[in-house]
Image 1 (tube, one colour):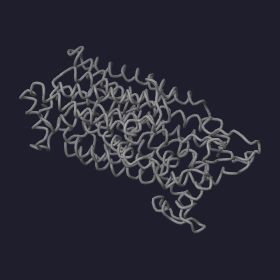
Image 2 (cartoon, rainbow, N blue to C red):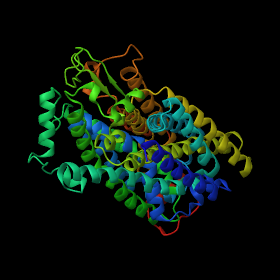
Image 3 (cartoon, rainbow, N blue to C red):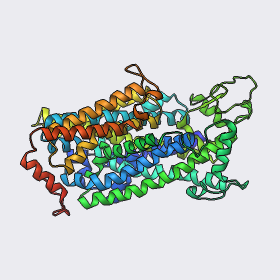
Image 4 (cartoon, helix red, strand yellow):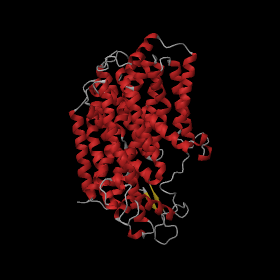
Amino acid sequence: MDVQTWTFILVGGTFALYIGIAIWSRAGSTKEFYVAGGGVPPLANGMATAADWMSAASFISMAGLISFMGYDGAVYLMGWTGGYVLLALLLAPYLRKFGKFTVPDFIGDRYYSNTARTVAVLCAIIVSFTYVAGQMRGVGVVFSRFLEVDINVGVYIGMALVFFYAVLGGMKGITYTQVAQYCVLIFAFMVPAFFISFQLTGNFIPQLGFGSEMSDGTYLLDKLDQLHKELGFAEYTSGSKSKLDVFAITLALMVGTAGLPHVIVRFFTVPKVKDARISAGYALILIAILYTTAPAIGAFARTNLITTVSDKEYSAMPEWFSNWEKTGLITYEDKNKDGIIQYVGDKEANELTIDRDIMVLANPEIAQLPNWVIALVAAGGLAAALSTAAGLLLVISTSVAHDLIKKQIKPDISEKQELLWARIGAAVAVVVAGYFGINPPGFVAAVVALAFGLAAASFFPAIILGIFDKRMNKQGAISGMVVGITLMLFYMIKYKLGGFGGGTAEDWWFGISPEGFGTIAMLVNVVVSVVVSRMTPETPEDVQEMVESIRYPRGAGEAHSH
């Protein structure tokens, strides 16, 4: 069977599974819609968290980034995995004990102020939309190649699907769908990795194949460095970023992870505080399977790509090449009119442009793996993008229904009406997300990295100081969040989108890239918060007591409802 038939079978089959699960686990109450009724077992929650967390950026873009950036791509690995450890140790158990549905809910109650709650809702919506734009784009890329439709049509199909199970099932539907999506995603990522690792190095395990010798006796990474040098690219294993920038990006990604609203809310879905820690542990192991394989896939894909296209006749290119050309993600311009592809580091002479986002998806085709493996990767990429998109849409809809309408505009609203508002919020969010998917600001992983910067600059200080600093009051938290997110947005618009007169890499403050600037904005947020809170009235007694009780594990076995 050809690739397209296999794709229809595998993608269709997985979609039918997701929709079936959504119908089976429809949410009947707001508690089920927001936190799946608080009764998800730790292993299932660990799998759902891993799927929620590993977005299209992890599945589609990260190995692609590493395969083009080489050593510099490691910041994504370190930042995204490290952030998880931070989340499990510093935030998850305390927030679970606090027992709220959403991050703005925690901030509104901890800072005894609706202004703080509203600022948090705005930050949650900005972060989630920046992030979801990347996911929808990923969905479009996969559909456009494998179902041979226009990228925009692909985005529409993705919107329809997410709409269906996020709006119907809420958190309960999403959780069990994500368990299925994790299984599809990890299987789809690992199968081609095993095949290609064996093909190139004779070692089945990609993590070991990455450091092994190839059939001609040279080490894989030496061979890659050699290929890069011959073609005039920067050496694969050496970095070009400054140490400070690498540190800033890694920290921004770590802290951003710990402030991401759609990941934090997963810890409210388990029965006990202890379960929050256990499920974070499971999630870390499940995520590590993919993350330790990504650098290997990046190196394999890069080696295969260079040996397939460099100095070869354009007319003799294999079928996968013309298939990706149709999507516009590979373009070839014959500058010297000799019909031979020049793929070199010199921008003037280079004739081939390749979108980084296709590396993982095209990898099995370049390596000539069986058709069912190629289709499996398409199903995996969609599972990754859709699971994260659903989690983010839920954050947007709960922020609107629970934190704006129920807590502020209409406190006497009935549960049925609140559920209706949550569903309307999700529906509007899907439409906006689709718009961003069709007009995306940059490629998937870069957009996602900016979302982490925004989360780091706004939420993280308010949450961490809210747990560990009793003296932190509403004035401090509000001014910190506003200053942090404004600074980050300004920097992002100026250096990434060319607003405010634009600027080049030479003009970066302290030489820190927009992806790493979240670290600076976060530090400014912390300073502003602490200084303002020390100059304004003390936190009320009852709030100080509440902060005490979150930190001490009295009766930590049960979650008290305050």
